[in-house]
Length: 192
Length: 122
Image (cartoon, rainbow over all chains, first blue to last red; front, side, top):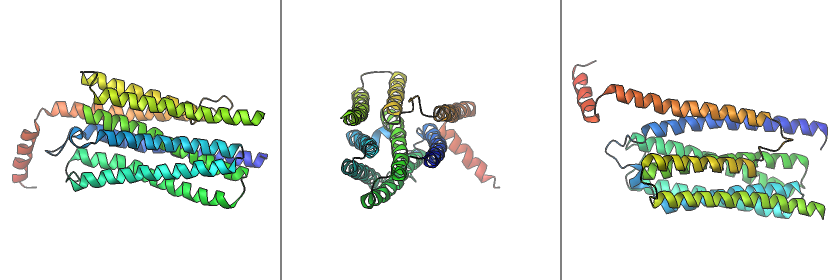
């Protein structure tokens, strides 16, 4: 990697990192809203009544596995193992898609049972927080798919390695946010 | 051969992070669902503590935030973000609880009050 590429890579990482930090502010606001409003059920169901806990645990582990695969894809790319990288990146997308599918199914179940976002402040804040995370995952999947197609055609170069690294950073960040959604929304919300 | 070893080490590092995270997630799930601790505040604190440990584990194993050669601004901006998050989240909860307390009305009383105020017109 020459000096120019190095510099560009640093700037790109700085840019994405600053975006991620501001994204954390967005999620902080939504978490604060949820924690303030989670008791305001307005006669509707409380968190403990509607969450299917084993289902959420599986969802969490699926996303963790997807995050692991993404890390392995980046390591493989770093060592020039193109075939491994493709398999790992493919699994990242596959498990990410399973995660978003599980989440959409959960949402449709809730709405189908009459627990939609218009019922109470608690449900509004719940759908906003978890839905925003889901939206990020959906965008991440689109990003990963574009990367996957591009990496199928071209041989690996420093530029594509950098792009994969940026995606990996984003994907790991979403997994970090999910840890707190799992802990605060589902575990604390569902039991206390 | 040497490169092969480095590759395996990196792969193992990610796998170790994932295994620790899986154990922590499953562990706290079992503890919470089975109601090992009775007091709500203890359960909440334990859950938050485990979430923080997972955060550190993933920052270390997945994001390599702690690696010496990496620029320090990543760590600095991360601390700044954490400080902002604590201010936003704790501050919101604090202020809203305080407002709730000073309001001194139950939900039912509040409802009645609003209805009476609405009768007066705008």
